[in-house]
Length: 83
Image (cartoon, rainbow, N blue to C red; front, side, top):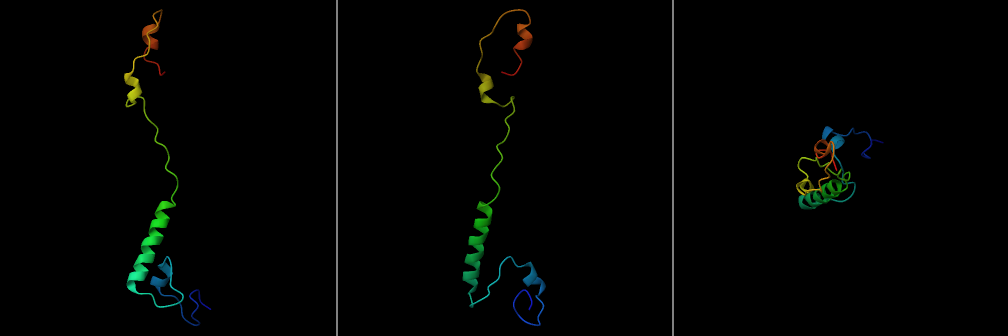
């Protein structure tokens, strides 16, 4: 038996590429279209979770807030270090 269940017939190239197939009944074009939309939406929502983006320090809005200045030797060089 072939994968499509028809003895003695090879599947066509379109049938080999198909993501799903109807094995029973005679669905209308609208019913097949509705099934396609539902399966596409389910596949899109089941994707991998989004990776959180890494924020760079240059565009970080919290960098606008000032931190207290600590005077002393080398304080001006430490003022640019990451907090």
